Amino acid sequence: MPTLAAIILGCLAGGTLALLLAAGTLAAGARWIGWLVSFAVGALLGAVFLDLLPEALQHGSVDRVMTTMLVGLLAFFLLEKFVLWRHAHDAPFDESDVPTHHHDGAEFVGRPGLMIVIGNSVHNLCDGIAIAASFIADYKLGVATTLAIVSHAVPQQVGDFAVLRHTGYGPRRAFSMNALTAAATLVGGLVGYAALASMQQVLPTVLALAAASLLYVAVADLIPGLHRHVAPEHTVQQVALIGGGIATVAILGFLLEP
Image (tube, rainbow, N blue to C red):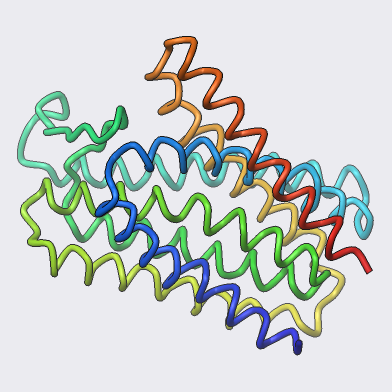
Protein backbone atom coordinates (compact mmCIF):
# COMPACT_ATOMS: atom_id res chain seq x y z
CA MET A 1 0.00 0.00 0.00
CA PRO A 2 1.38 3.46 -0.87
CA THR A 3 2.60 5.41 2.16
CA LEU A 4 0.18 8.31 1.63
CA ALA A 5 -2.80 5.95 1.39
CA ALA A 6 -1.71 4.19 4.60
CA ILE A 7 -1.39 7.55 6.36
CA ILE A 8 -4.87 8.62 5.24
CA LEU A 9 -6.41 5.33 6.40
CA GLY A 10 -4.53 5.56 9.71
CA CYS A 11 -5.72 9.13 10.30
CA LEU A 12 -9.31 8.22 9.42
CA ALA A 13 -9.08 5.39 11.94
CA GLY A 14 -7.56 7.72 14.52
CA GLY A 15 -10.25 10.35 13.96
CA THR A 16 -13.49 9.18 12.35
CA LEU A 17 -13.39 5.52 13.42
CA ALA A 18 -12.50 6.50 16.99
CA LEU A 19 -15.47 8.91 17.03
CA LEU A 20 -17.87 6.18 15.83
CA LEU A 21 -16.48 3.69 18.35
CA ALA A 22 -16.90 6.31 21.08
CA ALA A 23 -20.55 6.76 20.10
CA GLY A 24 -21.00 2.99 20.26
CA THR A 25 -19.29 2.85 23.64
CA LEU A 26 -21.64 5.50 25.04
CA ALA A 27 -24.60 3.48 23.80
CA ALA A 28 -23.22 0.22 25.20
CA GLY A 29 -22.67 1.52 28.73
CA ALA A 30 -20.15 3.14 31.05
CA ARG A 31 -18.36 -0.09 31.99
CA TRP A 32 -16.75 -0.25 28.54
CA ILE A 33 -15.05 3.10 29.12
CA GLY A 34 -13.03 1.85 32.07
CA TRP A 35 -11.96 -1.21 30.11
CA LEU A 36 -10.96 0.89 27.13
CA VAL A 37 -8.88 3.24 29.28
CA SER A 38 -6.90 0.33 30.75
CA PHE A 39 -6.34 -1.21 27.31
CA ALA A 40 -5.35 2.20 25.93
CA VAL A 41 -2.67 2.61 28.61
CA GLY A 42 -1.12 -0.68 27.55
CA ALA A 43 -1.34 0.11 23.84
CA LEU A 44 0.23 3.54 24.37
CA LEU A 45 3.08 2.19 26.49
CA GLY A 46 3.64 -0.65 24.06
CA ALA A 47 3.77 1.69 21.07
CA VAL A 48 6.21 4.01 22.88
CA PHE A 49 8.65 1.44 24.26
CA LEU A 50 8.37 -1.39 21.73
CA ASP A 51 8.12 0.60 18.50
CA LEU A 52 8.53 4.38 18.50
CA LEU A 53 11.57 4.70 20.77
CA PRO A 54 13.50 1.76 19.26
CA GLU A 55 12.87 3.15 15.75
CA ALA A 56 13.94 6.66 16.77
CA LEU A 57 17.10 5.30 18.45
CA GLN A 58 17.92 3.22 15.38
CA HIS A 59 18.13 6.35 13.22
CA GLY A 60 19.22 8.97 15.75
CA SER A 61 21.69 9.32 18.61
CA VAL A 62 20.66 8.46 22.16
CA ASP A 63 21.33 12.02 23.35
CA ARG A 64 19.23 13.54 20.57
CA VAL A 65 16.29 11.19 21.03
CA MET A 66 16.19 11.36 24.83
CA THR A 67 16.60 15.15 24.91
CA THR A 68 13.77 15.49 22.39
CA MET A 69 11.54 13.26 24.52
CA LEU A 70 12.28 15.30 27.63
CA VAL A 71 11.57 18.58 25.86
CA GLY A 72 8.41 17.06 24.35
CA LEU A 73 7.05 15.94 27.72
CA LEU A 74 7.61 19.41 29.18
CA ALA A 75 6.05 21.03 26.10
CA PHE A 76 2.88 18.91 26.35
CA PHE A 77 2.69 19.71 30.07
CA LEU A 78 2.91 23.44 29.34
CA LEU A 79 0.38 23.18 26.51
CA GLU A 80 -2.15 21.50 28.78
CA LYS A 81 -1.37 24.04 31.49
CA PHE A 82 -1.99 26.89 29.04
CA VAL A 83 -5.38 25.50 28.04
CA LEU A 84 -6.39 25.18 31.69
CA TRP A 85 -5.04 28.67 32.48
CA ARG A 86 -7.02 30.18 29.61
CA HIS A 87 -10.15 28.57 30.97
CA ALA A 88 -9.49 29.83 34.49
CA HIS A 89 -8.63 33.31 33.15
CA ASP A 90 -11.82 33.54 31.10
CA ALA A 91 -14.12 32.03 33.71
CA PRO A 92 -16.37 34.55 35.52
CA PHE A 93 -16.08 32.63 38.77
CA ASP A 94 -13.46 31.30 41.13
CA GLU A 95 -11.55 28.24 39.91
CA SER A 96 -12.72 26.26 42.91
CA ASP A 97 -16.30 26.78 41.75
CA VAL A 98 -15.75 25.25 38.29
CA PRO A 99 -18.41 22.55 37.88
CA THR A 100 -17.20 19.01 37.33
CA HIS A 101 -18.77 15.95 35.78
CA HIS A 102 -17.99 12.41 36.89
CA HIS A 103 -18.13 9.65 34.31
CA ASP A 104 -17.08 6.14 35.34
CA GLY A 105 -14.69 7.49 37.92
CA ALA A 106 -13.17 10.16 35.69
CA GLU A 107 -13.61 13.81 36.55
CA PHE A 108 -14.07 16.32 33.76
CA VAL A 109 -13.84 20.07 34.28
CA GLY A 110 -16.74 22.02 32.75
CA ARG A 111 -14.62 24.02 30.27
CA PRO A 112 -16.29 26.03 27.52
CA GLY A 113 -16.96 24.12 24.30
CA LEU A 114 -14.56 26.32 22.35
CA MET A 115 -11.67 25.34 24.62
CA ILE A 116 -12.54 21.68 24.09
CA VAL A 117 -12.44 22.12 20.31
CA ILE A 118 -9.17 24.11 20.31
CA GLY A 119 -7.32 21.92 22.80
CA ASN A 120 -8.34 18.61 21.28
CA SER A 121 -7.85 19.82 17.71
CA VAL A 122 -4.22 20.61 18.56
CA HIS A 123 -3.85 17.21 20.22
CA ASN A 124 -5.43 15.40 17.24
CA LEU A 125 -3.22 17.38 14.85
CA CYS A 126 -0.19 16.03 16.74
CA ASP A 127 -1.67 12.52 16.51
CA GLY A 128 -1.95 12.89 12.74
CA ILE A 129 1.66 14.01 12.44
CA ALA A 130 2.71 11.06 14.61
CA ILE A 131 0.83 8.65 12.32
CA ALA A 132 2.44 10.20 9.23
CA ALA A 133 5.95 10.06 10.70
CA SER A 134 5.46 6.44 11.79
CA PHE A 135 4.29 5.22 8.37
CA ILE A 136 7.09 7.11 6.64
CA ALA A 137 9.62 5.42 8.91
CA ASP A 138 8.15 1.91 8.78
CA TYR A 139 4.77 0.38 7.88
CA LYS A 140 4.76 -1.82 10.99
CA LEU A 141 5.47 1.21 13.17
CA GLY A 142 2.62 3.09 11.52
CA VAL A 143 0.12 0.32 12.29
CA ALA A 144 1.23 0.10 15.93
CA THR A 145 1.06 3.87 16.36
CA THR A 146 -2.40 4.01 14.78
CA LEU A 147 -3.64 1.28 17.12
CA ALA A 148 -2.33 3.19 20.14
CA ILE A 149 -3.91 6.43 18.98
CA VAL A 150 -7.29 4.83 18.24
CA SER A 151 -7.33 3.08 21.62
CA HIS A 152 -6.82 6.31 23.56
CA ALA A 153 -8.94 8.44 21.22
CA VAL A 154 -12.09 6.44 22.00
CA PRO A 155 -12.21 7.18 25.77
CA GLN A 156 -11.01 10.73 25.00
CA GLN A 157 -13.95 11.26 22.65
CA VAL A 158 -16.32 9.83 25.26
CA GLY A 159 -14.90 12.21 27.86
CA ASP A 160 -15.15 15.18 25.49
CA PHE A 161 -18.78 14.31 24.76
CA ALA A 162 -19.49 14.16 28.51
CA VAL A 163 -17.89 17.58 29.05
CA LEU A 164 -19.79 19.19 26.18
CA ARG A 165 -23.10 17.74 27.35
CA HIS A 166 -22.36 18.90 30.89
CA THR A 167 -21.67 22.46 29.72
CA GLY A 168 -24.97 22.79 27.88
CA TYR A 169 -24.49 21.30 24.41
CA GLY A 170 -27.23 19.13 22.93
CA PRO A 171 -26.36 15.59 21.75
CA ARG A 172 -26.18 16.52 18.04
CA ARG A 173 -24.09 19.63 18.60
CA ALA A 174 -21.74 17.81 20.96
CA PHE A 175 -21.25 15.06 18.37
CA SER A 176 -20.62 17.69 15.66
CA MET A 177 -17.99 19.42 17.82
CA ASN A 178 -16.23 16.09 18.40
CA ALA A 179 -16.32 15.39 14.66
CA LEU A 180 -14.67 18.75 14.05
CA THR A 181 -11.79 17.91 16.37
CA ALA A 182 -11.48 14.42 14.83
CA ALA A 183 -10.94 15.96 11.38
CA ALA A 184 -7.75 17.57 12.67
CA THR A 185 -6.12 14.11 12.73
CA LEU A 186 -6.35 13.85 8.94
CA VAL A 187 -5.06 17.41 8.56
CA GLY A 188 -2.07 16.55 10.75
CA GLY A 189 -1.40 13.41 8.73
CA LEU A 190 -1.39 15.26 5.41
CA VAL A 191 0.76 18.07 6.81
CA GLY A 192 3.16 15.53 8.29
CA TYR A 193 3.46 13.64 5.01
CA ALA A 194 4.12 16.83 3.03
CA ALA A 195 6.73 18.02 5.51
CA LEU A 196 8.49 14.74 6.31
CA ALA A 197 8.40 12.58 3.16
CA SER A 198 11.59 14.20 1.81
CA MET A 199 13.21 14.95 5.20
CA GLN A 200 14.33 11.58 6.56
CA GLN A 201 16.94 13.28 8.75
CA VAL A 202 14.28 14.80 11.02
CA LEU A 203 12.32 11.55 11.48
CA PRO A 204 14.13 10.54 14.72
CA THR A 205 13.19 13.88 16.27
CA VAL A 206 9.56 13.64 15.15
CA LEU A 207 9.29 10.03 16.32
CA ALA A 208 10.71 11.03 19.71
CA LEU A 209 8.12 13.81 19.96
CA ALA A 210 5.39 11.34 19.02
CA ALA A 211 6.64 8.99 21.74
CA ALA A 212 6.59 11.87 24.25
CA SER A 213 3.01 12.73 23.24
CA LEU A 214 1.71 9.18 23.69
CA LEU A 215 3.66 8.68 26.92
CA TYR A 216 2.28 11.94 28.35
CA VAL A 217 -1.30 10.90 27.52
CA ALA A 218 -0.77 7.55 29.25
CA VAL A 219 0.87 8.76 32.46
CA ALA A 220 -0.76 12.19 32.89
CA ASP A 221 -4.27 11.71 31.53
CA LEU A 222 -5.21 8.02 31.71
CA ILE A 223 -3.34 6.35 34.59
CA PRO A 224 -4.57 8.84 37.26
CA GLY A 225 -8.15 7.88 36.36
CA LEU A 226 -7.36 4.20 36.93
CA HIS A 227 -6.28 4.98 40.50
CA ARG A 228 -9.85 5.99 41.34
CA HIS A 229 -10.70 2.26 41.43
CA VAL A 230 -8.58 0.75 44.21
CA ALA A 231 -10.40 -2.52 44.89
CA PRO A 232 -8.19 -5.60 44.30
CA GLU A 233 -10.52 -6.98 41.62
CA HIS A 234 -10.37 -3.68 39.74
CA THR A 235 -6.57 -3.64 39.97
CA VAL A 236 -6.33 -7.19 38.59
CA GLN A 237 -8.67 -6.25 35.75
CA GLN A 238 -6.68 -3.11 34.95
CA VAL A 239 -3.34 -4.93 34.95
CA ALA A 240 -4.77 -7.65 32.70
CA LEU A 241 -6.13 -5.10 30.21
CA ILE A 242 -2.90 -3.06 30.27
CA GLY A 243 -1.03 -6.27 29.57
CA GLY A 244 -3.50 -7.01 26.78
CA GLY A 245 -2.79 -3.62 25.21
CA ILE A 246 0.96 -4.18 25.34
CA ALA A 247 0.58 -7.73 23.99
CA THR A 248 -1.59 -6.52 21.11
CA VAL A 249 1.10 -4.06 20.01
CA ALA A 250 3.80 -6.72 20.36
CA ILE A 251 1.81 -9.33 18.40
CA LEU A 252 1.02 -6.83 15.66
CA GLY A 253 4.71 -6.00 15.41
CA PHE A 254 5.59 -9.69 15.11
CA LEU A 255 2.95 -10.38 12.46
CA LEU A 256 3.93 -7.38 10.37
CA GLU A 257 7.66 -8.01 10.62
CA PRO A 258 8.98 -8.44 7.06
